[in-house]
Length: 277
Ligand code: NDP
Image (cartoon, rainbow, N blue to C red):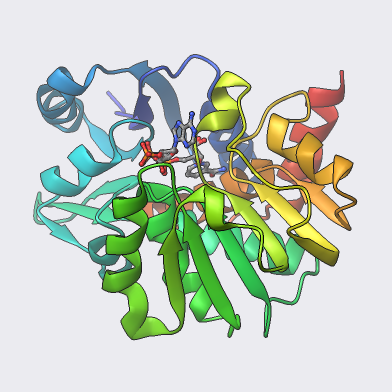
């Protein structure tokens, strides 16, 4: 009997995830035979669910909110970018039976911003809203694009300050709360809080986006997210959501698992067409 390689995304909630659709399109495009499913996994069952999955012909997993830190702790060994992020979104079974943990969020964001949207990040002043796992994964990749400065603003101010202290070795970075965000203009504002998932918005002054500035919400939705709307209302040159990032981070995971790099452009186009229906 032929055993089909199994992949899945674990999260909670998970039913609206587009990852199964994306990996199905990747598999069709590249002629790979695999199945990819979404599974709702409560945090307290994460470890046993992962063990069961890999014991049952599972080859690779994506982990999303709120499981990325647990995936980081679970992995037998980690890539440098995952180590730094302290969050893992991709687990991959290795030939020796061990589990590798990686974080493909940063490369997903940078590829979407630069390749798909033609945004040059060099010398830009960047504001990141939120100081969770996603922020940890994107700081160094942004630095590698030679951005000028990074400010991380978070509801829990200590978290932003501690994060800035940890990442300052890669270049200029400041951690603060939202209430001091009225003295500077930013060329790129990234929403890495989970507020869009509940239709909320961090408390932002209206005068902080530079002329021709860009807004990017890591969250995505069929309708414009609250932060995408904020960007539009504040005259952003572009106000984007995280669908492209989702496809790009998935392509990187697919490459890790299958050794084949799918084309992302047709998949992004397909998903954009589907959400307009
Ligand atoms: P975390 O749970 O690690 O962090 C959540 C962050 O949101 C924290 O900084 C938290 O602040 C902040 N936050 C939550 N509620 C509020 C609120 N009401 N007001 C202000 N701040 C709030 O999540 P992640 O970092 O993993 O993910 C963040 C977002 O990025 C999610 O929407 C996720 O879906 C998205 N994402 C998208 C990806 C993509 O491929 N498109 C990839 C990765 C993430 P505090 O510290 O004070 O609690």
